[in-house]
Length: 267
Image (cartoon, rainbow, N blue to C red; front, side):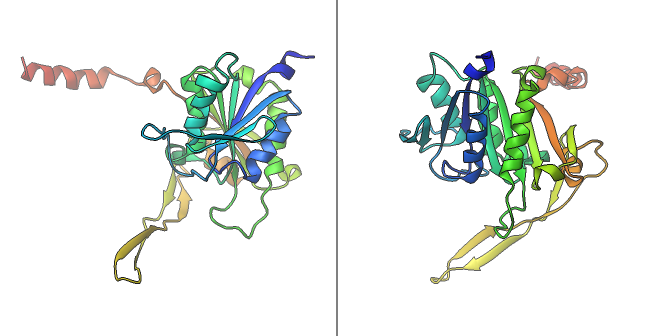
């Protein structure tokens, strides 16, 4: 058997272990490697960011062969795998997804799908986040999870993982369309999306105030060249590499001048 067929892969997500997206990618990756495992939250954890459960115990239950669910967040699931369940033979790759909804532009900072992949990178495993760019909170649509699963499997077959290190994560967004209608794939930059700031103010039956965040996507910044938003709009798969060592490309010279001036005042 080829080396890849023994590659340990962990699959997690933020939509919960019963979601169609995680089942799709889990089954697809089993055709790539014989050593695929699932550890995912037992409930939906969307937009919970990079949360870890530090003030409560984590409960884990089995629900199938190599399939488990946890009371925590995606980052909890990854840490449980790397630090406990698979610590003697750690997963080489952690795939987080397939998320029902895009993780483009600044959405990556809210995303617990991306956080699952990022947690893997923090500990030396390759992290891959996968999202299907469907309409948010619109259930009357067809979800092409199979397209995203097939695309990821093909990228793995083409040795995508060898093209990136473990100093960042691979963020993959796939258009929500049949596989044969996808235009291709692009290596992209993070874009910027514009959302309304609408808050819905209501009263309950006891005349107490409550609020819903109901802001909607309005547009994206079209001045950013080769953005992930543009690629998806045009029907392409977007791959963005998100470094975890952000300081590597930071110009400290201007900041040094500020620090020098500050230090003069406290001597």
